[in-house]
Structure formats: C-alpha cells, structure tokens
Image (cartoon, rainbow, N blue to C red; front, side, top):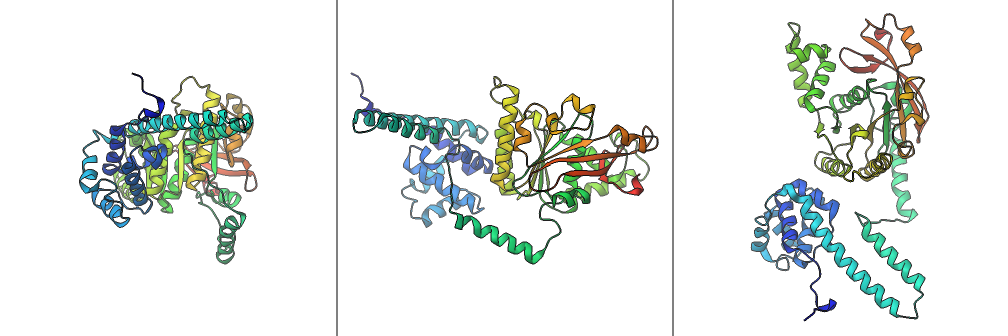
Amino acid sequence: MTISGKDRIPPHNDDAERAVIGAMLIDDGAVFTAQQYLRSDDFYSPRHRKIFDAILSLSNKNIRPDLLTLNDELERTSKLDESGGADYIASLTHAVPSSANMEFYSRIVQDCSLRRGLISISGETGAKAFDETKEPKIILEETQEQLFLMSDPQRIYKYMKLEEAILPAVKRVHHLFQTKPLFTGITTGFTDLDNLTSGFQPSELIIIGARPGMGKTAMALSMAVNISVRQKIPAAFFSLEMDHQELMIRLLSSETGIDSRKIKTGFLPSSGFDSILAAGDLFSTAPLHIVDMPNMTMLNIQNMSRMLRLKEKIEIIFIDYIGLISEDNTNVPRWEMISRVSRSLKGLARELRIPIVALSQLRREAEKAKPSLADIRDSGSIEQDADMVMFINRDRELDKTVEDQAKDNNQKVQLMINKNRNGPVGTVNLMFLKNTVKFVPFTDEHS
C-alpha cells in the first residue's frame, strides 16, 4: 500500500524544535543563534511558534527569557494554554542535551521548514501549470520569486515611504543644528584624523590596510583604547591573529610606557610593577570586549556582534584581520570568499548601525611605493564595499627626516585616507612608539 502525497505527514522534527526552544530558555546566546536561522513559521508545531514568538518578544524588551518571564508573557497575551501550559514549557528545558549544539538544532528545524516550503511551492506550481489560462512565463516568474524568498537566510524585507524616511533625517539635522558638535561620529583620539573624518560614523565599514609588520594591530588597539578606555564607549575587538594574553601585554606596555619585551620577560624597573597594577585597574573598568577565537567564520562574527550589540551596547567593532576569517566551504576561491566577507561586514555595520573597522593585508608591491586602493589583497570588492580606506605608510623619505631611526624609539608614520565616501581624503602624520607598540598624534615633542 502506497501513501499518496496528500496523506503524508509534512517534514518536521519535534525533538529538534523542542531542543531549540529549550536551549533558548537556558542560554542567552542561543536566542541570538536562533534568530539568525529561524522565524516562527519555521516551526511545525503551532504551540512552538507561539512560544518562539514570546521569547523573541521578551528579548526585544531586554528581558531575559526564562520559565517565569515566559509564562508571564504568554499569560499576559492569553496564549499560555494554547502553548501547552506551564508544565509543558517547563519540560522543554529538559529536552535539550546541551545549548552548545544550538546551531545544529536550528539547522534541522530550518531544513524541515524548507522542505515543507518546497513541497508547498511545487504543489502550487503544479496546480498553476495545469491551468491553461495562466501564462507559463508568469508561473515561472512567480515560482522563482517564491524560491528566492526561501533562499534568503533572513527572509525579511523592509521598505518605507519617503515620508517615513525623511522625518528621522530632519530630526538628526535639527539635533546637530542645536548642539553643533565638533565631531558627529566616534572619535579615534587622533585629532587630525578626526578633523578629516568627523569621527567614525554609524553603518560605516572602515578598512585599515598595511603590509605585515607595519602596525595594523597596534593602530587598531590604539584606537580601541582611545575610544573605550579614554571615552568609555563600549567596543569589541575581534582578534583572529593574537591571543588575548598577547593583546594584554601590548595594552599594558602602551599604557605604562614600559618596553613590551621587559614586560614579557619580567625584567621591569623597580617601579614598573606598580605601573602595571595601575594600568590593570584602569583597563578593568573599560567597556572593551575582547573576542579571542581563531578560525572564526563570518557567521561566528555576525552572531557574536549581534549579541554584544544587544547585551553590552557596543558602539564600534574592530576586526584583526579580514584575511583570517574562515569559510565553511573550502572549495570557494579565496577572492570569492573575501568578497563574501566584505559584503557581509558592510551589511553587518548597516544592520547594527555602528562603524566596523577591519584590518587588511596589502600586496607585496605596496612596499615599493606609497600604497593605493589597487594594493588591497585578495579582492577588489573590499575597496568597493568600504566607506573609508586608509593605509599605514612608512615612506622611506620620511625615515631620512628622523635622526638615527635604528636607535630612536619614535618613528614618523603616515596614515593615508585614500577613500572616504562621506568626506574628504588626505594624509595624517602620526608617531609610532616602537618599544611600546603604540601610535600617538604627531607632535614636536615626539619628533
């Protein structure tokens, strides 16, 4: 006996659905993971859809979802009984072996949802194809549109009328007119750079490029310290190259002025450790969040960024560096992988409405002359996607103007802004303090 298509139970996995909801109730991070993969109608069970919506409603209100808050939310909306009741919801927390597998559970639920969607679309398309009053090309276009909507990972599209878009812009201009701030974005602590850019603006993707050993990480750390430690602005630093201990040594060296090699070996001056303790106290109060995870994929970065934005209210992200972001599909050519990463970073900056500063390697040819946009390594899409591109340049002629570079701790460096979508381009002079691996504004006292 064969079962006809209409008598088959649509694809679903009740255990995976229960595991997803259970994980969301015991782990804050699971909520953010689920949001990247699922929406409520991906769940086959109507009660799971209602519970999922209630959890997201709590999360959007900055209320941590747990059994008590969830039951209260469902009762408030008169959906507790429809969701299975308090006893059923409590059982969900026992249905998940570990929230560490949240991505796996979510993919199972999503795959089942996609299968149901394909079955529905194929059925509708078949019915339309039998209707001779419908044009085949129109049927094809409608089917393609449905499949495209299914293939988008977010499957959420927004539009607004001009009247809706213009009001926030007018309000922003009015605020600027009244306050007349010197800078409209997040300032880096380098005055000449901030004068050119007016600060790093929300939704911008900023690329800092240089050859290895020119100080990309030091530049990003100097900016992060100026922003987070000095200004107390919450920031995140994704370190794909150095572990957090190496970064801390650099931060302690830059703050105390003690040679980083002496800190690493413990050969400190007599008052050195007191300075280290004072710097430690200063850093312990700074809202700077270090993400130390090698082989991070773009999805890892997106999920962590969204969580940090929501939980820690971060206002800027640094990524060191773009070429080390891994790709799940190893068969993808490197240029295509970097293009995907570049587009995703720009999309993430727009989604979170904060600037993202990503470091990038330059081609070897950049050592022979001043770097240009064509020297960005691996993909031209970085240049296209970025709102601002700047290069660290140690011009060989500059070395001649600084006496005895080999012995001098201070080194004059150019920060060249070669692209600035929202403002002017230009060159800023900085000073690199080699022993403490730190960038500071260029002044006569450092020359």
